[in-house]
Amino acid sequence: MTTRRPRDLNAERSALRTAADRLLEGTPLHSESGRLTVTELLRESGLRRDAVYGDHKDRVEEFQARARAQQHTPAVARSLADENSQLKQKLADTASALANEREITAGLRRLVAELDLELHAVREGSGPARVTALPARRRPGSHA
Image (cartoon, rainbow, N blue to C red; front, top):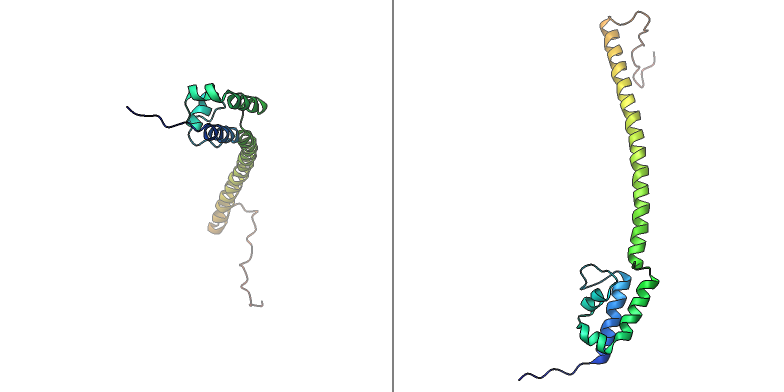
C-alpha cells in the first residue's frame, strides 16, 4: 500500500498565482495555447482540477476576473499586435516607395539605352545630322 504525500496548500496557492501571472503576461511555460482559460491555468500550474476547485476556487475566480479585465488578451499579446500593426504599415509604405523607385529606375534604364544607341550612331557617322559631336574629354593637368 502506497501512502500519499501530504498536500502543501500554500505551495499549491503559490503555483496557481504564478501560473496565472505567466498566462496573463503572455509568457506561459507549460500551456500549449496560452489562452486565458481555467483549463490552461490548470495545465500551467500542474495541479489537478479536483484539488484546485476543492481548495482554491478563490484563486480560479481571481484569475477569471483578471482575465476579463484584460479583455481576454494578455498585455504582451496586445503590445505585439500593436507592434505588428505598425510594422505592417511601415512595410506597406516601404513597398510603395520601392515600387516608385523601380518605376523611376526603369525609366532611367530606358533613357540610358536610348542615349547609348544615339551615341553609337553618332560615332559611326550614321546618326541624325543635327546631333553635334562634343569635343573629346580633356584630361586633368593638360592645358589646351
